Image 1 (spheres, rainbow, N blue to C red):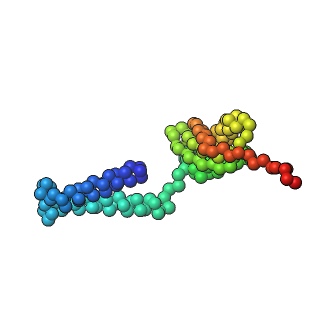
Image 2 (cartoon, one colour):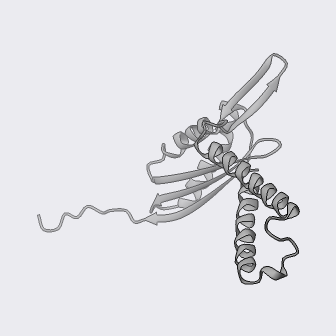
Length: 172
């Protein structure tokens, strides 16, 4: 929703800029004249729209806002699990592995659960793809067991592989 408003805002700023430049260069092409009632109504409407849009954007950026969360509705109430909690559970599983150096997790809600996109920086090791595959299955299984949130998919992208540092005994 915010992205749509942001997009509309930038389109409006662009159109306003182009129109302003064109109005300065060729004012006779505009059917409305400054000071005319129609012109004033149009200009005030556009100005009020962008004022409201900018206030909303300011509040959404600097306000507390609602934390992103996955909500279960039950007969007795509701359970809310924040994406931050899901992120911590996943990072706990990831960093149990000694060959993982960095991770970046993106959680996308779906109708029946979440989709995970995990970017990793790993240390070079034998059978890395097998280890990553096991970890992927472990993340999906543990996330559902711990939180009851179903991970529909866990896409793991290895962004970098760091060579193992070897300890040299030469020169001693």
